Every structure is written in C-alpha cells, then in structure tokens.
Length: 160
Ligand SMILES: CC(C)(COP(=O)(O)OP(=O)(O)OC[C@H]1O[C@@H](n2cnc3c(N)ncnc32)[C@H](O)[C@@H]1OP(=O)(O)O)[C@@H](O)C(=O)NCCC(=O)NCCS
Image 1 (cartoon, rainbow, N blue to C red):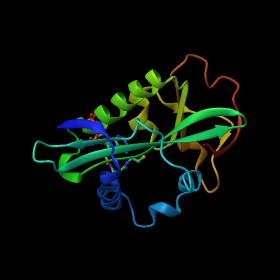
Image 2: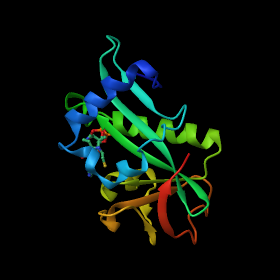
Image 3: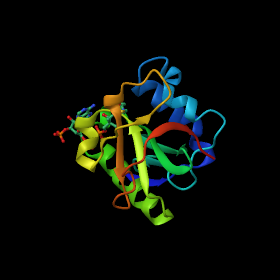
C-alpha cells in the first residue's frame, strides 16, 4: 500500500468508497453541514492504493471554527471492507495528523467512536457543540499543541 495526497482525479473514487463504507444518507449527517461549500484542507487528505492502483482507504479534513479559533475536522475516513483490520485506518490517521502538525495546526476534532479514536489520543470534548443532531459523546478532540483545547467551548462553524 502507498499513501499519497488526494488529487483532483481521486475525488469520485473516494466518494464511491465512502458510499460503500458508510450507511446510506451519510451526507445528511450534521458534520457535512460544516463541509458544504468549503474545500478540504490542502495536503492533508490522503488516499491509500495497492501496487495495482486499487483504492484501499481514504481520509479527508475540513477547516472549522470554534468562535474565532481554527480547528481541523477529521473525516470522513474509511477503509475498504476487504482491507479493514490491517492497520490501514491507523496509518491514514497517524500520517495525516503528522502532516497537520507540520502545517502548523494545533487542534483536531471529529465525530466518531471513542473506543476507536482513543488509541490516537482523541478524548471527549466538553462544551464543543456540533450542529444538531449530534450525540455529544461522539464529539472528540486531539491536541497537537498541548493545551490547544483547554477552555475552548462553543458552537462549531464552517471554516475557510
Ligand atoms: C473505522 C475504519 C476506518 C478503521 O480502519 P481499519 O483499517 O479497519 O482500522 P485499523 O486496522 O487501523 O484498526 C483496526 C482496529 O480498530 C478497531 N475498530 C474498528 N472500528 C472500530 C469502531 N468503530 N469502534 C471501536 N473499534 C474499532 C478494530 O476492532 C481493530 O481493533 P484491534 O486493533 O484491537 O484488532 C474502518 O473500519 C472503516 O472504514 N469503517 C467503516 C467506515 C467508518 O466507520 N469510518 C469511521 C467513521 S467514525
């Protein structure tokens, strides 16, 4: 498997992978309201392909704001069902978070399963409100810069 930055030509193939991996209607999720009309963050979205060029997994990031503070919204991330459980998801997440640190981002958030994302250092964010309906238990954050989430509360809005 090889990881590389998602290119324009990858877009629809990645969309098809997400359609396969998520329940129908994924775009009705509240997190998509933060992505509407905003391009993903350049250089952080990655695709994983095998030596034959077959897409095995993908991750994307969007910019968001909590008040005036910038954060990265991680996701969607998905691994093809035939490739799951082999560490590809973890690789995509760790590699992209490393690139986010290199780009100077200080905090990352997502809506997802704490038992999975906890292994990467994500913890529940208190008082950070995603557009409804979102289960607050699934709103998780990671500090790239120590203390980056400390005391940060409020509504998450679209970034640019
Ligand atoms: C979640 C996903 C990206 C993980 O990718 P992956 O390549 O299978 O993950 P890895 O191989 O790095 O890690 C596998 C481990 O994560 C665990 N795991 C996977 N999904 C999990 C979840 N939702 N909750 C808790 N643990 C989970 C597996 O049980 C496995 O555990 P182990 O290491 O103890 O054996 C992939 O399973 C997927 O695409 N799922 C469908 C789409 C999805 O749910 N995306 C995430 C949205 S929140």
